Image (cartoon, rainbow, N blue to C red; front, side, top):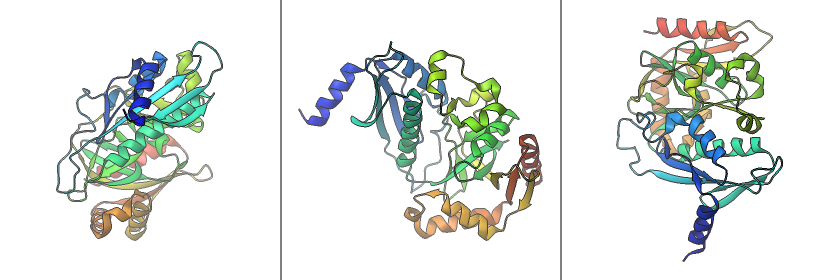
Amino acid sequence: MTADLRVERRLDSAAPHRSSQHRLLDATWSVASNDARWCALVDTAYAACAADANAVGTAHTKTAHTKTAHTKAAFVILDDAPDEPASRLRVFVDGVRVLTTDAPGAVLHRVAWEITRAAIDSERGSILVHAGVVARDGRAVVLPAPPDAGKSTLVAALVAAGFDYLSDEAAVIDPGTLRCRPMPRPLGLDPGSWPLFPELAPRDPFVVECSAAMWLVAPDALRPGAIGAAAPAEIAAIVVPGYDPRRATTAAPLPRAEALTLLSEHSFDFAGHGRRGFRSLARLVAAVPCRRLSVRELDRAVAEIEALIETAR
């Protein structure tokens, strides 16, 4: 028996509780723990990614560049004393310990990050851009932005206003069709967003304890039926948001060369796509309106995007 197999069996015996099987892009995964509450938290937050949940986030058009194999990942959370107020928590990914902490919030943040990384690493056929994505009537708005630009906050407001949710993390763009595939992971809302969405505050004491650094929000908590169709959406506009409390909320034209640069800079493994990837993004920015959106008032930002997608028809 190999050392890896021995570790896997020890973890299996130490973590008898298991979440449902989930899938995000081409990664399938589950979470095991000796505390069933972790599995319940994951199943609730990632309900849209359950393997039997309408296949949203899995259906997409196959191309010559689309990987056909799937990545499998196993996440284990062990609590040395789950019934005690303070205990040591350990997180394992595929048998390797990646975190030891006494902070449940750090565990939730790390597990969510590892799940997202596994999903992104599993996708080889598409261009992945760090962006939020929403859609209306099958037409998507891509919101590329760096961390802390208010991207997830804006996505949450748009979904609450009636847009379909595709992702708050990555635009998964087919380089041939330029359509965007859903990646419906839960939204990660940082403390700065919490006063804007008090109705999303966790209520369960265990979830409250685990959410000290981030709320992990299932899309349907924003609006029932928030997940759109599984089919890839046509990209109708590119909007680069940025929070600026000093300026009124306004949208301004974004030069296409600048839009192309921003999409390239915010892409995951852009170099791996070579010239074809660059040409695909160049075709995209040439075909759709590109805007820079300064955000102060969320309702006004939503109205700007609603007007843009209507005029882009």
